[in-house]
Length: 240
Image (cartoon, rainbow, N blue to C red; front, side, top):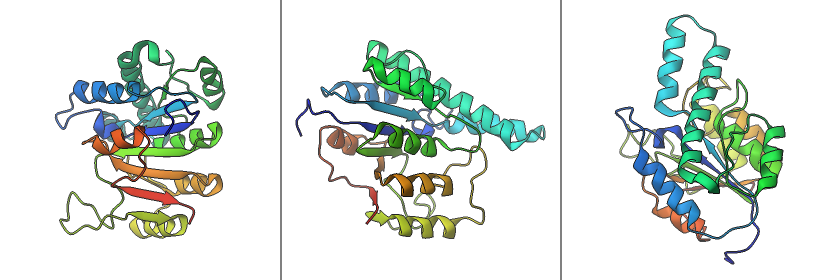
């Protein structure tokens, strides 16, 4: 790939990658992300969308214990994802737009500054994966990369089942079948972790974006991708 080629893309960083299992901020991991992003000269628009992670779910569980509504739980998740975004802005320093866009309108202004844009959630009822897809559609991104704590999409939870099978490729219909099969409801509750839900799927189907899902725990695959090698070891989702 020509390193100076104009290319728009969106990278979704799962909140699980921002914290350790002990609920500590994973400063080393955030610094590693920053180093990779800065390693390539670029033009075009690059947006990073941060999830809420373990800390968001802790707040959401506390709100539920007080009989708070799911809308209120969503609001907490959104705020935590935006705080996570500010951590990345602090790490990127002058390479990043200094504010976290809270709407598509604010994003459209941030684009004018030609810096990395880092954001979290936008509105209740929408996962950060849905946000990443909406942003990718808005900026005309060539790709959406989803970095998570597993290597891609499996037929069952790879953390619980050693024989879980990794899907190397899924088309939109296969992904829809998998989502419906795995859940009794069409929408995840606030803070519930899923790589994809039905809202995400609908945005994906109308936008025809190619999605690359790979591990963010061991960043060798993402390093390859960022340098232009898209033959990843993970899951690729496309129309056909």
